[in-house]
Length: 242
Image 1 (tube, rainbow, N blue to C red):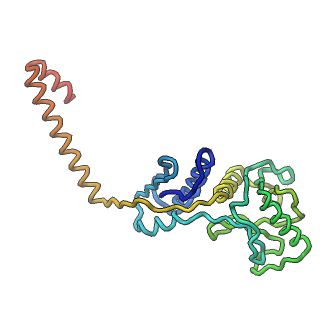
Image 2: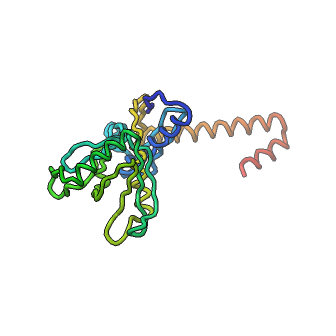
Image 3: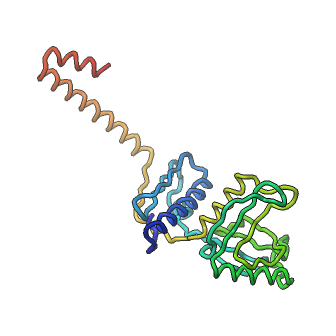
């Protein structure tokens, strides 16, 4: 797949790394054994899916543009992934363990300030059963990956997601969540440029042809060694066989 972007240099490298991380997550969810996701050249990603029963379905699943959104309980979209500047793990001083620290762009910071102000002022009414009015859901590709509650106005473009209760996030959980948020921060459209499906019969045929080619090659070497070196050629051929 080829990334449809005008980014270059370090910006392109970071974008491709984030895109690779998102695709790897999607591939892992397919439950396949030993999938391979690699960056080729500057703007292409090769995905190998051993054991995929439906190649077209797999391509559709991994090729969608990553969409990260912050959505309030009344389904109002606060901001999207392009307005998330960074996400990382930090110590949760209040609950122990770890928390996720968020940093927004200037545009994202203003949108988040306005949203948290409306929530604290009680202006937001939840449109979904079981979702508190003060919730801001973090949604990646239509899936809610976190739904923290807002307790105060956040005016400065930085926020912290905590697990709450008696303990914070575990290190692995916090790392995974922050990676998902970072991965959705720079969505890029991917264009499918080449697809091939290798069935089990083709793989078996390739193995047979490889064995035949190897046997022919060894026989030719034996003949050449005997013709060129006579007795010493026989010794060399025996050594090669061993």
